[in-house]
Length: 122
Image (cartoon, rainbow, N blue to C red; front, side, top):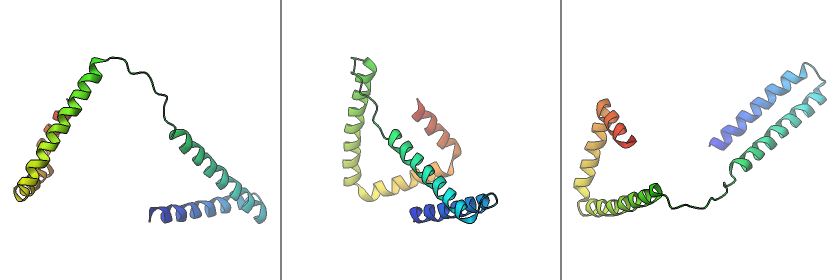
């Protein structure tokens, strides 16, 4: 759906560009100029996405205590996640109601949202 909308928008922009260029050139030249401008813009977009998609060069990982702490935190999070998933699976109905109540509380209370956001930022 978004792709179709993007094509429609490009068509409208191309037509508007054609109408603008038509003031200065003949209809055939205006159409040709509009085609070249749209083609150049699409080539720039392709080039930009290719450059943005390149992976950065890998650096050697130096023994860094922060990296070790991050790895430990990730492992701890993984273990806690598995345990909580098991607990939620064992108590499915209660987990559903608890998560709904927690979601409602966070959605209703701006103070609770800001507290949780501050807690996550630390």
